[in-house]
Amino acid sequence: GNESSGREGAELVAVGAREEIAAVGTSEHSGRTSEGKEMQQIIGVMCCTHCTASNIPVVKEVEAIMDPAAFTVMRFALTAIPFIPFVIRARGDVETRNAGIELGIWVIVVPVLDGILGAIVPAHTWFGAFMSIIGVGMLESSGSPPCVGDLLNFLSAVFFGVHMLRTEHISRKTDKENFLPLLGYEVCVVALSSTMWYSVGAWLGGIEECNPSSWTWATFWDWMMVFPWIPALYTGIFSTGLCLWVEMTAMCDVSATEAAIIYGLEPVWGAGFAWFLLGERWATFGWIGAGLVLGGSLTVQILGASSPTLSNKDEGSGKKGGDHLLVSDKSNGFSTSPVVVSSRKDVPDILKK
Image (cartoon, rainbow, N blue to C red):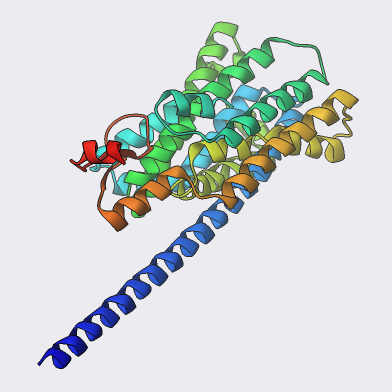
């Protein structure tokens, strides 16, 4: 009897060991799959950075032949057109509509905002962000002297930072089938805002083109013939609509801080396009700045890819040991970082150890 019970006990131990080994193997496989998916999304964000950077020389050339406000209206109107059917289909989804309108209003400050709002930002990310900020400043200073446009660019970066944070939060709590309606609401808000901006500016400036009494079929046809449709289609459909969809999908796995550091390369690639397409040249100061931006981005990506994030470690330990409760990031608010709360009651025993 003792021998049989001993054999049964040994078999139970062996079965338990095999189950534990299988569980560990499954966990490691899922971890590798998650890392591979995140790397794919990072590559997608990098491609978006190249596309958005190519907008810079295109828009600069368009400004030389027409009013940039009018071009902006047509650009974002073309962006919104493919998404209108999805907006109509999801018009009853209040949550998707509100989230899309918010993202349209909040159109690299992200590490600062992310840290203030409770996220754990690693030291190497702060270092990479600092290098990128210094590099962008040097790159911007290597051209024309400071002007009002530089201030507007800075304000744009602030709003872009908030937009990235909210995109991360909203994309992770929204079903993927609602991404297209969400983007539809977003770009429709941008298109309407651009139209209002152009209309108010034209009304205050007394532009004759905005007077309906002066419109004729001949003037309309002439305007259609001289309008730069190819740049509008490229910047509206490809480098805005498509890139926004890729960005929304990628933000499910890539943090706002990582994405913002990658987007910090945009002025570098934009200056590169201007170098080859427009013949513009950098000063030595600009080359140093470009190197700092590139170094900051590589620092975040290499160190970030080589070590798992703290939130992932905490999530894994919480699932394995059951000693922690992971508060979902689906709560209302800016911060999307998980909050780890200890559920163990033997705190005095832990302190004694």
